[in-house]
Image 1: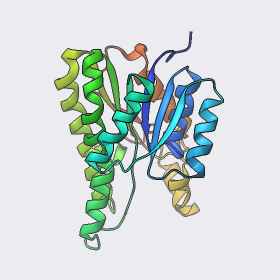
Image 2 (image 1 turned 90 degrees about the horizontal axis):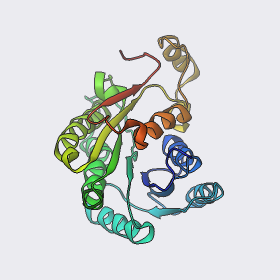
Image 3 (image 1 turned 180 degrees about the vertical axis):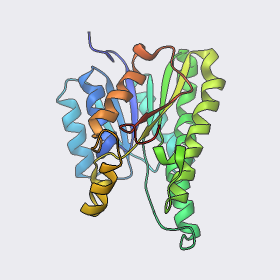
Image 4 (image 1 turned 180 degrees about the horizontal axis):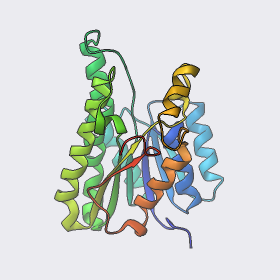
Length: 248
């Protein structure tokens, strides 16, 4: 039997990168997948087709995760379409990196709203269904910079550190109803976002990692699958760093 057979997951920001890798891995493990992204475009349609080709129910939804009312609408629609929510992966995120002295209020607000407020929005909307079911796994995508900080990323680091505090609080609040809450903190993962880093900077970064390489979205997806499955039924309130020992 597949690890996630019969479960339904919501994965936010899943048309590309880590979110898409998680959605695909879940589908391979028998999970029905509702996924969101900001726009209904070719990426969304292609991802939807890839997931459906794996023999599960899958549908993409256009959603601004930073907007409370829009999130409530989308989650209600997903419950209507799929009937239940077993797993929520809060993965939507952006970066607007610059030194604090140059950072604008708009750059701060945008990153906090998309990265942190979206986690509140989706968790708040999905918890009603999970509490009724008396089961569920919430997985929030943080980052190693949320644990250790990073120059030039005060906004991003603050949003990802906030996610960790939120994750631990939700684990304490919802645990008595059988709902688990954990965070994943990826390190240097090779995605479209990190591909923009200059080659020499990327090599220097990889040299500083004990495993001497960047991680892959699929390696993050493997941890997300464990946390979604019953293999982790007694794991809650934890932060799993997927970083090749970069942050220990």
